[in-house]
Amino acid sequence: MLKVYFKSLVLMVSLFTLISCASLPTDISLSPELNLEKGAYRFTNTKAWQIDSQDLRVARHLIEIVDGNNVAQLINEQHSLRLLIESNLTRAWVSNQLNTSQASDYKVNIKLIKALATVTEATFSYEVESQMIIKIELSQQGNTFVKLFRSNKQWEAAFSTNAADINKELNMQLSQLLNQILEDQDINTKLQQF
Picture 1 (cartoon, rainbow, N blue to C red):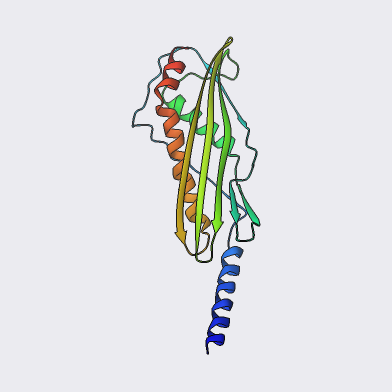
Picture 2 (cartoon, one colour; picture 1 turned 45 degrees about the vertical axis):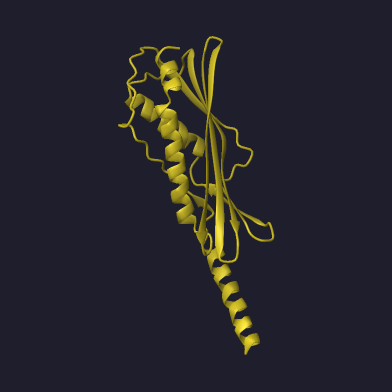
């Protein structure tokens, strides 16, 4: 009786694991939400800023799922995360009346250093550890101001890895990080009078 029960349990767990693994996407799309009303900064500086970005990540995938055998399944971003960050920050700064230009001595360089969620799967749960790091570098004729922004997040969930839930958490994390950059007094002061 116990042997039959154990075999049934192993079969159900194996089937459940196979079904959950098969349903994971190969890529996801992030869409951060920026809160421009709260702490919005109004720029009166007439100088135009050239905004650029680079992706300096070592790991170019967004999610890494590791099972008990340390075999990783990778999930990429559907659209360039670097361009998403650059366009969201640029749009927010322009909506706060920052002047921008394709060529200027005043430069904003957005460097994506890290954006990775590592998922560790157990039998009936999974744990996610996510880290995002963005460096903002302002420069003008030899003068440079650099500030690093980081966000670390950990959470656990029951059952098998759920890409939709991870996507939702990553969206919230990226939104918070971008809002932190937009509301940063040092960055806003330098953009206003560098």
